[in-house]
Image (cartoon, rainbow, N blue to C red; front, top):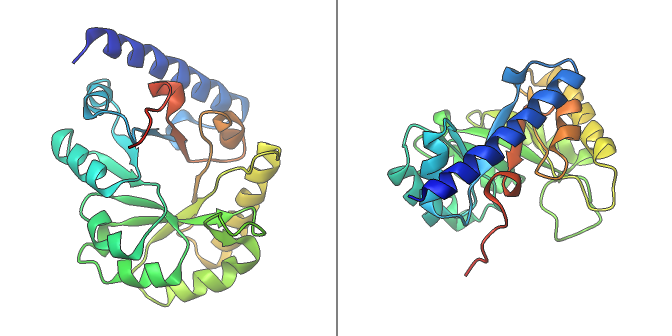
Length: 230
């Protein structure tokens, strides 16, 4: 484990946390209202181990093999966030390592998760699609949210704690995040458990915090440029 890498990650982490604190202060929020999820996907397990030594406990992954391996080698008691596109055939594997699912957008997938042995231990963010005209974007459109929530609630075992979204390119992140926050507030009237917002990445997390984000997903600002995936 390189001492130079540890110093680099520690410094990057410090800078990000300073920015989080400033954004929270500017919006009149408490720092402990915001969970930093360090997106370690594609980075070596040694980086995740360093981050764990530095006190981080929330890690984001999107590959089953990588998530499971890191959980076993880093800390099985850390909180592991699955952030990738869900595939039906992978659901059983995802439940073996992930604690929080950030990308639920299918009732069919919800039904499969509902049959997992540890479903009561899982927490779900419903992914909101702010570009419904694009077929390549995952997520549920804002217009479809009420019906989707009713259908998932009928399953009785899926614990949706909030909404997740990514600000579309070419759109003011503040406007996008405010739209998701408004949708969350409306949904919360019928589903009080929906209290969280997973939104904001390296390029826009300060705006997300100001719009009420409770979980921000930061990769490159802490770990640097992402390695090319095989």
